[in-house]
Amino acid sequence: MFEVEGFLEECRAALAESTPEIAMKELMERTVSAPDELLRAFGRRTRWTTSSRSIAPTTSR
Image: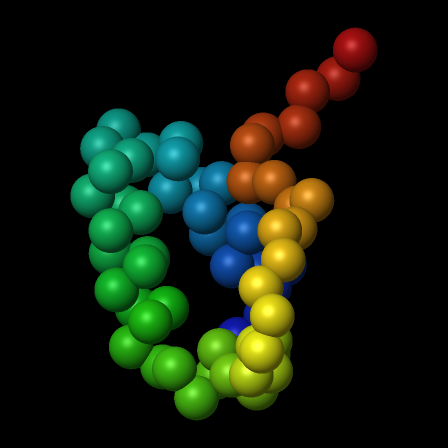
């Protein structure tokens, strides 16, 4: 089952790889290979909006 928070964690981990572009490509290929799971997680959209979620690493100040 697709979980948004888990996906974001995987994105962060992919960005930390030595070749982040390859890691992200592989992650996206796995993610879109299960469209039914994405539909269950997000529902069918009739109107698209932006989200405030970020995959950028958090920083402490």
